Length: 287
Image (cartoon, rainbow, N blue to C red; front, top):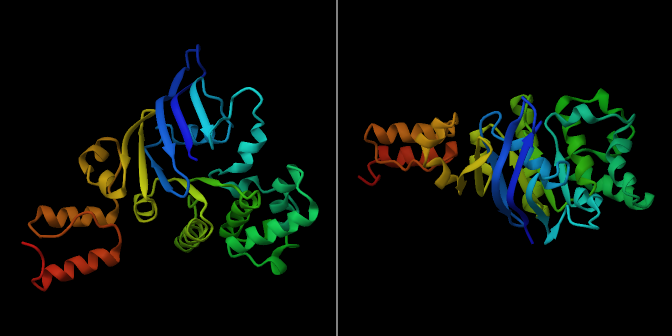
């Protein structure tokens, strides 16, 4: 069953001179097994929206259902939803605080009362999912590791809770190119191999175009566009009006098309673009 958001609205500092409408009439379903990208300019409501998914914020209007249950309904234990919906904040390594890698990853499972023998298996499994060597790193201080490794430790800490849905807020922010590639590779592996539903908030259009099967565009607290990467990025002018750019490859192909090249402009990887351009250069493109 999906995460279902119905008529969700949220206002910060309501009733004060600093009142700000963050979300307005959001209606959204996130199906199991999907890879969702959420994009929008700074202040569009992305982080506010995802904090509703596991009950960190309570809707002022509307409802949030996870697997058919209203998470703010009478009698619902919200610790259950925080286990089902794992949320990795931007710069999650700043939340690392334990003295060893093992203790940090084990914190969440231990906090929900998991048996110690089960915790060890969960930690091993989570570390494997993000390519961290259990025996080599379990007793090491996380503060002695690289930024990319610390971020993987933070993600492993959420994965150790065995979530059904994994929400990531700008997981590659501040990392160098190698660190970004590693993190995205592990996220893609979690999605493909474990079947975890992924919800990725990002400013990187190339990342979301390559990874997501559905993209949601937020603008001023509302959903302004929703669809496949091809559908969303075909609306180049509308995106630019909202302060968003096309992925680099799609932008290149659009410019070539404007100049009369018979190329497709719904391509998002360099390999696809190379094949398409070579096809035209060899005279096999559709005129």
